[in-house]
Amino acid sequence: MTDLETLAEQFWEWRSAQQPRSRDDIPRIGRPAGWLPDFSAGAVARYRRELDGFADRLARIDVGADRASAVDARLLRSALARVRWELDVLRSWQRDPGFYVDQTLGCVFDLLTPLGVDAARLADVRRVLAAIPALLDVGRENLAGEAVREFAGLAVTALTSVADDVAATVEALGALHPAGWSPDDDRALAVAGADAAQALAAFRDHLAEQLPGMAGAEPVGPHAFGWFLREVAVLPHTPAELLEIGRREAERAAVLELLERNRNGSAPGGRPVPRFTTGAEQADAQAAAELAVRRFHEDRGLLTQPDTLRHYRTHPMPAYLAPIAWCGVADDLTGPDRLEEDGSAFFPPPGPDLPYFYAANAHDPRAGIIHEGAHHQQLALSWRHPRAVRRHYYDSCANEGIAFYNEEMVLASGLFDDAPATREIVCNFMRLRALRVVVDVQLALGGLDIPAAAALLEDEVPMDRETALEEAAFFAATPGQAMTYQVGKTQVLGLLADASRQPGFSLRAFHDRLWREGNVPFALQRWELLDDRRDLDRIEELARLTA
Image (cartoon, rainbow, N blue to C red; front, side):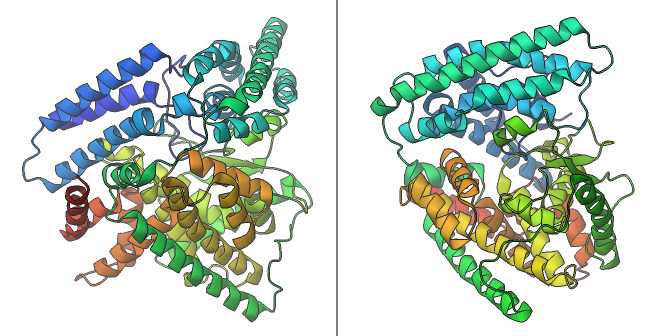
């Protein structure tokens, strides 16, 4: 192994234990056996020292003239910058009480998203539940005098019925009785669940009591956000340029939706109508649709579907996950050590009042297949990359940009020629994701607060208020994530337009490469594929201007 490969391997082994749990599904990472998050004061100080050590080692590595190795080195630099962003800029471990909901009940949720719960997984759930009181004690200590009022209020709201939620999950898990699980194990699980529920409810009440004296939220601001764009996301844009992209694309999406509705004779603002009466019916339809979408990619010469690539399946939400489904994205995109398994996602029972994305999937499962299913395929292909450094998540612009691009690609290629209402849904998705750029950047710069951001999404998409509030709160706590769908897609379109002018261009080959390199920021893909450094040169220019 080269020095760079050794450093990357050691960094990602370290990151598997250090990285905080996130509500987002793309950054999920395999954990060491017996892992628990640790953000005690001593652990944070150690993380900073270790991060400095990785950065010093990377700075001493000379990759020479090899462009692929230079790309790998820049990827690792992005990963190091993300850790610095988490620890020292966002400081969610110190400012956001919801961070500790994620590191406690969120970890239980993640253990329950893969299909099937055996005795070993139940034991892991019990272990995490038993650790929750101590983890929340660390949270109280870190948050003292630092917690942000808006984030704390959101955590209080999320934990409104947490005792009942945990009790319902534990009760449903206790009814599973997997092989090797004893009545004594059930009793120990019940005790751990009761203690965890009590601790989470006490954490909620403590936050509610402290809420009036907490400081208000402050945006990360243009300087820090600009650093994130250049160093973590490897983006050649200023915040003002990103706002312009979002606004222009929101206008374009609104017109496309208007034209589609005019074509179909549809009333504006209509909600998708569920096509299924039972979850089993919806799951069967999704399985058939996933095969049809894969055939479509092959038949149209868009994207190769290797026989080794497993499938993406959806299933009715199990009783043990439903009470805590608010903790994250209820899917399992597998991982580099689980490539033989299908990706999966859970959905609630079909009905008239479903949240935004669930409603779209209950009308036509292909609406989810072309995005979440694209995530599963892209990650599964990237996890097989011959260069190990590129098998990891770095920034969502590449991953979300590809999945969002895939939506418009299959729309334009005719996948939904038989489904007028689904065409409208996909156009509405475009509208939402363009507006997310505006919301994300404005939250980061202080132009919007969380209620105003939620109101914008609720009114302009439109979408249900619950989903709008969830999105706005998540975006405020994770600046730079919401914009990635549209910004990444815009970069894909530019890269494709330029690549298509090269001799011997093949659309299928371009897409095959794009999916395989799907963790690599597009500025680096452009340099490696086209020997074009314009985006990287602009990033360097912006860094000089803001130094």
